[in-house]
Structures are given as C-alpha cells and as structure tokens.
Image (cartoon, rainbow, N blue to C red; front, side, top):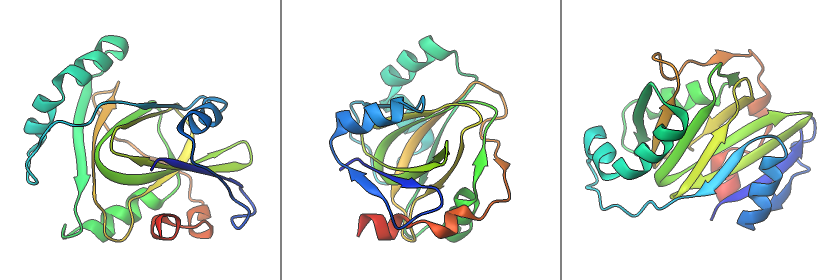
Length: 183
C-alpha cells in the first residue's frame, strides 16, 4: 500500500504516517510533487526486456509524452538476485537533485522516495501503479531495500537521462530505510 511518512529533517524518530492515498497526494501537492494512480496491469514476463515494457505501456508513455515532450524514456528495475544491487542501492541512497524534473511510473514492486523539502523529509513509499513527479532541484534520495524488487518507467526532458547532482549530505543514514519502513 502506498504510504507517506513525514519527518522533521532533524528528528528521524518523529515521523507521522499517512496511508490514505488522497491525503498522501494532497500532502505531496503542497510541496509541488504529483502523485497519481495509473493502471499497471499489463502482463509481462519476469525477464521482460525494456522494449517489451515500453511496448506494453505504450499508451501511458504516449499520454505523458504528449504533455511533456520527453527526450529520453527508459526502464529501470532490480531484482533481489541482481549482482550489482548493493552498489546501485548506495548510488541512489546518496542525497541528490536533478536539473530536470523526475517522473517515475512504477509497474512492479516498490521503492521509497525521500524528499527533503523545507525542513522536512517526506518518505513516500511508491508501489505498482503509482506515478510520481518530483520537481527539478528537489533534494531527495531513493531506497529500494536490501532485496530490491521494482520496475519503473523513467521519463526525462533531456537527452542525458538520469543525472544526479549529489549534495554530499549523509542525511539518508539518519532516517529509517526501506526495510525498516516496510517491515
């Protein structure tokens, strides 16, 4: 179930959890983050290629592309048996921003976006069917857990795709991680 936990950025033990989707979307909207439910029921093989995913979700991709004119669209996903899962997790756990706004459409599994805005951390557990759009220059990090299972379609308005501008902060180490929040 999609959930949001809001923390003061200096008190990671003081989180307030929200589980009602409309309340979550409203709270995120107050920081200019869009969260919507989309249909993510296309049948895919466990080893579906990026091309298979893009073809299966062609309608959703076209709908978003008409609105935003994306330059790059890709598929990102990890399974618990991926040999580089630990290194990839560490990369995304580092607090960063993007010059481009970020849209992710979760078609399988789950992951948590931690949005660090105005003295608060918004830990947003996204699951299958969730579409999240994070504004450009929003400080954040992402955790998929120690045994990741997720697949999402990523959309970029630049040719470069994913480019992280790392802050050097170690704030992510202070907050409950994916495994803790989903236990």
